[in-house]
Length: 279
Image (cartoon, rainbow, N blue to C red; front, side, top):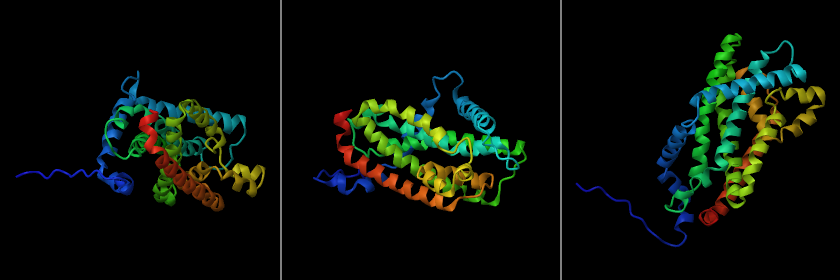
């Protein structure tokens, strides 16, 4: 019995016309590339996967001391401050790692780009999927910390996957845009670490965004929510520690996230044809 061989048809405009269908056709590449990146990520490090535990714990300690005690952003009578910080750090760390990994993914896979055809969008998205592994480890640490501080999760923790999807979409939208820029302008890779470092202090990772309302006004908090990371972090804290959710700010963040997804996909697709030449 002979196995049917998929027919390859070469015709003008076929790639553009069937791009999203090809994305489903090559869906196994998501798994193959993600598993490959996951295996090599900590392969040549001294303590290996333990970095996925040490890094968030150290960051949480630094942010707790910096914002909770030195900057006096700690709110008395609320949930344990380390838990609040860690609840905000889980989505931020995922998005920061996803942005860093996705930005150099095309250059790191230049041999694939110049040899075979497949939808190039698979490469940065696979890098973002790998970042979910570190986020899962951090979330397990968060649950352990909540048990230590005797902080039971509220019922709305069942809605946490909704905000996880929102975080993934934001990481994908920004990641696709930055990835395409990094191929065209190689010096852009030096900007990414700076953006990630500054973003950790601009986003409400080490403090609650409710502080903006308390110290300034609700209007200031609404404008602050133009940073789409704010809505994601607020959503995580609402689900995990029951911190009140600021609905107008969440809506603002969702709108900006959708805009980033549209912009990222559009720019990536418009520059995709030149990737092989630029690399």
